[in-house]
Amino acid sequence: MVDMTVVPKLDPSWTRIVSEYPRSSLPKKLNKRTGKAKNSLFEELDVQLYEKGANMVTFHTDTHRLYPWIKTLDSFYYNHLGKCDEFNINWYDDPEIWENPSDNANSIVIEIRDNTNTLVYSITFFVTTGTIRAQGSKYMLFVEKHFPILKLILDKKFKIDATAALEGIERQLKSPQSYSEVVKRSNREENLPISCAATTGPNVLLIGTSNIKGIKEDKLTPAATTTKIIKYTIDETIEYIQTCELCPEVVIFHSLTNDLTKMDPQACVDALAELIKIVKDKWINTTTIISLATPRLDNLGYHTNGQITNALIKQRITEVSYCDHSNMLKDGNPTPDYLSDDKYHLSKKGTSILAANIKKAIHTSLNIPMINRGRSRSRSRINSTRGRGRGSKSFPKIYTKTGDKGTSSTYTGERRSKDDIIFEALGSTDELTSAIGVAAEFCKDQVLVNQLEQVQCVLQDIGSCVATPHSSAREAHLKNTEFKPTFTTDLEKWIDKYTEELPPLKNFILPSGGHCSSHLHVARSICRRTERRVVPLVKANEVSQEPLKYLNRLSDFLFTAARYSAMKDGKEEKIYSRPKSRDDSDSSK
Image (cartoon, rainbow, N blue to C red; front, top):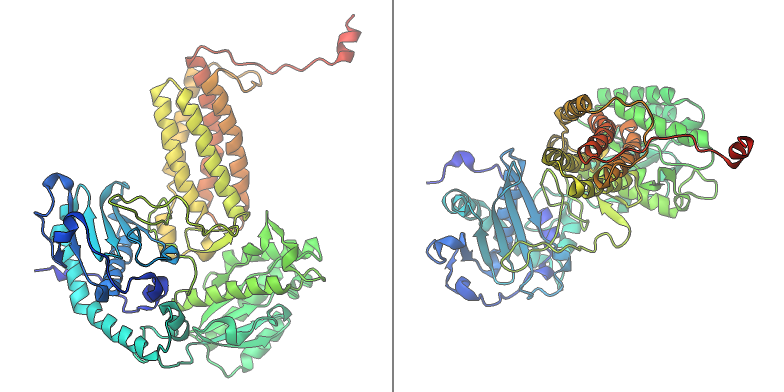
């Protein structure tokens, strides 16, 4: 008997599954299974099929149950175990590039890792043959505990739901379509509808300045019915709200463009706070979203006021959600292409980005998945990797092609330009890790080597923090990437220990002292740059203060470690001396 207390609470919605795995990506007829998989049982386990040393077990399903099995695996591993502290779940797939649904390489790979990131076992679902394989040192955990739960979920819930849902969709299809095309029409409903009946969806009220004029409310999102109102100032917006007869599920304010030219940041935030209070008093159950100030080039002071106001909003107005527009910046500066000739109204490109950002904010607030967007499927606390399993080993492809247009995903799933300040900080962190790795290769002191390796691991955690901007992070994201202050304490202890053994520092020293010492000095200078890249994120309240403290202390440690390494290697540190100019030399004659 299955212990019902360990069966997860199930999300009945099929919207995300059928949109992420369109019908065109799955086979109409399964390929023949090969090897010992030919003798596998239908949705039952034969632990004698492979030799014990193989640490694996295999079963198969049929074409009609591909969707139910994907949904079952997603519910148990991604949405249940992925939220448990005991496990980290990595999910590799890319159905968007499964151009040939009969290609045996098309697969889903799920890695189940413990909280030390050690592989427990992996699942490989070869969708073109219907073969599902569990393999790993602890595969018996799958056999004895997890497989019975999967079967219960499949047979009691998703088998019936999938049949009804798919039959309902088939009745609506007059020509071959992908399921994602159907979902575009029906994703307003919580569950995948049997009849795909039309619905008006939740009511969304979008109020803003002239920058939202170019947004077509009927095309903003099929997930909701949007009403757009133009109000040029916060005062005008307050006046409208007080007399508004609508009762929206979501209200979005894009109201800062004009007030920024007349009020200082603090006054803007005070006015917005008053507006939010009025909304909360009038519509108790309405979700409020503040669309933050967009970049501008007409006046540096106005642009700076906007950025300061955005930061203050996040600090003071915490009972709302935010719609961030930092993807309109390049290296922290406004992107001219996104602005019109007057340099503060948005161009068509800028309006498109504004609309996309607002759409994402709406979907997030309503807990409705974005359709036809890149996915962030990994729940690993360290990496957010996607790929495609291949063969008997769970090797994801190193390339995904999703960044070919110059964008990449944060851990929260948000896509930003690769020259965004987040990726600048991530790039510097990665460069720092590499520089420390080179230094460690030349280091002869094993204790120091171990410490440098620990630093590299901590820098991976800092990368996770940087890749999780608070403006788009959920509570689970922040919990998974929380940075421990004890790491900084460790650095301070190491610095104090090495300082006791070193001669007092009486002069400025030049980077020198042998291979290890010199490379540690290089790492130190990169560390300072990394710190500078993280500072703007901390100021914007996108990253917590603790990673910044660690980087500040790390540069001190690398400096001390460089001196210690030079001493251990018996190498002389070069002392700075003021260079003599030619004039100095001539005057001494």
